[in-house]
Image (cartoon, rainbow, N blue to C red):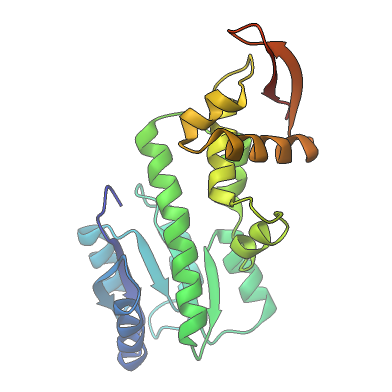
Amino acid sequence: MKGNREIEVLIVEDDLRVAEIQRRFLEQIEGFQTVGIAASHEEAKTLIDILQPDLLLLDIFFPDMNGLDFLKEIKQQPKQMNVIMITAAKEIHKVQEAISIGVFDYIIKPVVFERFKQSLLRYKDYHKKLVQLEEDGLHVTQQQVDKLLRKEIEAGTSEKSYLPKGIDPLTLEKVLEVLGREIRGLTAEIVAKEVGVSRTTARRYLEHLVSEEKIEADLAYGTVGRPERVYIVSI
């Protein structure tokens, strides 16, 4: 998804009533567009070749194919597409196989809208980060890789839950990115200008990172000869 283009979704489901429910669910979630519905193996292959969607909603059971086998085919495609498995299959070995092949999520029918929406919004966040990294053309950091790999349902909320009051995760991420670009260390004033916050706010985030032992701080003399704290990423 480049720029503000909607995430293009192909529904691969042989029960057209279920496919229609999924299509209507997608209409209620901003940022997604259903580009097609495939009810068979051949239809799915043809639409994938033509449409090159970003995301597939895939069932396991079809009259002419096994969805897990098709998932393996998809993973061999030049264009990397993510897959959310939506199926009535509850056998643990099927779940394990789907996860090992590389599904983004596994939803068991009947689909509840809130669970469906939760999965799609997590994918939207993942996709946005991935596209941004591609557009930046930069080497990724371990922190960025960890965020891309974090797919647990509670991932977004758990990260916020342990942060103290007054520490926003998005602002914290920006502060870390600024610090990561400068190996010699930065002052609260410089970080504030880079992030676009007040010096007091920047110092609050920096002191939080010091308390978490994610950065180090030491006294140094600034441009006016006064001692000030300099912060350096330590992990």
